[in-house]
Length: 220
Image 1 (tube, rainbow, N blue to C red):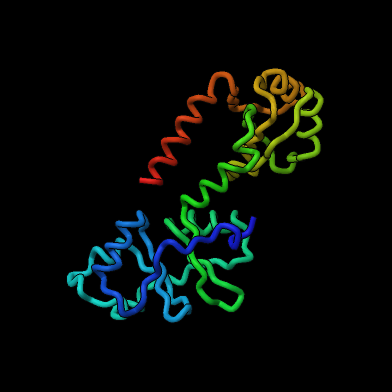
Image 2: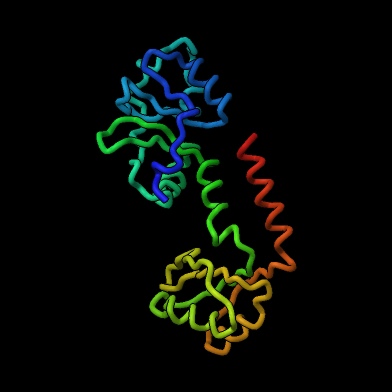
């Protein structure tokens, strides 16, 4: 999925003539901690709430502070995973989106991203989760899929959760099977080190509650 498919225009952008008070008011209204600053569709940067709250005079104009804008943005043709990366690296609540001509077209918020991720089959479809540690050189998706499929199951999703300094990785897989114990036993027979597992039967309600709580928090 590309950024162009989930970009929104509901959150206003600032102009250089807007006041600091206006910027803070909009951030509070739309529950974000950054806003894009735009001059006739030309993206100038984003301004942060923490910076604004340290300005003594709220009647100052954004024009007086353009040198402190952050030039963080993404393009319409970037994958949503790249947007997630920018959010995490820069601790953002939204990412401005530009066209191929470098014109501002809208924003993508953390809440947008959570909605997209929640609709992905790896999240939405029921199943069990298995976490394992392994040497990075031993990682083989085809081998992992073969072991899962030998237990009449399919891999819904597979990703590296964490990379360690000793060239080992933490791998998380989700399969379309409620009870994962037989799959775990097969992995262990093949020498895989299982560090955690989450059965649908015992953990789904708790995980769903945590997800709902997170979505409610983001939507406050």
